[in-house]
Image 1 (tube, one colour):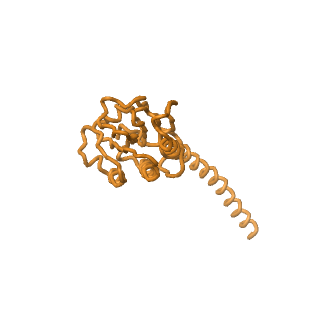
Image 2 (tube, rainbow, N blue to C red):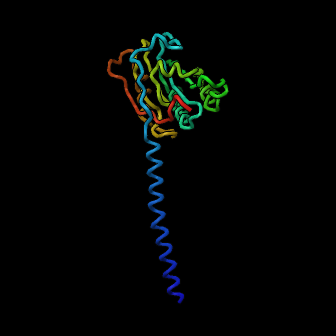
Image 3 (cartoon, helix red, strand yellow):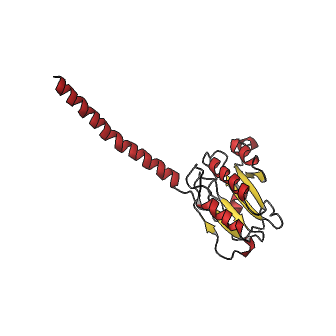
Length: 204
């Protein structure tokens, strides 16, 4: 009798494992797909827009980042921005725009992400009321980052994280630092582009 109970117990365990393994595999696959599925790519102007709400600094490249203040994925983008600014070999003017819907008060945009961005040395932080700046620069996804050279030519458009919500070495950060290591005025090729892994920028 004990032998049959043991066999039955082993069969139950085997069946449970057989069900558990594909369930875990499915969950991992869903998470991986979510982490690596890019948002809508940006459509930035090839030259600094004349109707930009901010001015470029004289003789400096300009780095512009667009963030949805309620997007947890963008914490990693701000961490990467801090790394870029800490390692840039050339003077750089960095600006972060936080989306603010027309019907919301300023507090809606001034989340912990706002405070994180404001704490990065050398970063200017602005509310992007009704996404006017995002539309001007063709940004659609939170974390969209743009690099313009001192003459206003677009050098980079994309994201600066390798996975959604995860910091670490990535193509966007490497590309920006590589562009800044050379004379940014001398780049005549098409802009470097990387996927933006974040939430939809304009929306709740």
